Image (cartoon, rainbow, N blue to C red; front, side, top):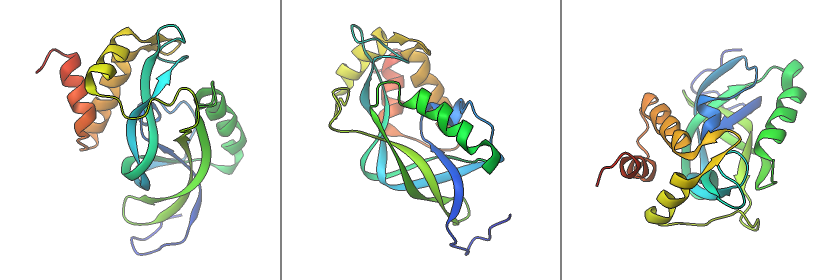
Length: 183
C-alpha cells in the first residue's frame, strides 16, 4: 500500500533500526525506508557482554537513549513473518535483557507515520554505560571482541552505513576518526 506524504494513518508492522540493524537486519522484510524516531537518540551507552565484548572485556555498542531524535532505517515486515522476526530480534537484541522492546511512533521518509518495534536502552540495567567520554569509548571499542566480531568493525560498519544514507553523526564520526588514528 502506497502512503502519500500527507497521510498520517498509523501503519503497523515496522521495525526501527539505528545501529547494526541498518546494515545487517537478519530478517525478511517487504520494504525498507529511512525513518526518524523522536524522543530518543543514538548513543554508545551499552557495555557489550555478548556481541562485541565479554563480561571480562566489555565492548560498547549503541542504544537508543532518552532525548533528541534518531534517523535510521525502518523495515516493514509481512504479517506472515512477524512472529519469526520478533523471535529472531528478541534472541539477538535481548541476549542480556539490556533493551526494552517498545512500540513507538516513527516518521517514515515522505512524512507518513508508522508504529514500529524499537529497542530502547534500559537505564536501570547494569550494562547501561551512560554518557562516556571518547577516551573511555576508545578503550572499550579497541578491546571488545564478541560473538558478532570485533568492536571496531561494528563502529566502522555503522558509520559507513550512516554516511551512505547521508547522515553525519558527530560522536560516531569522531570515534571512528580516533580509531583510525586521526586527531
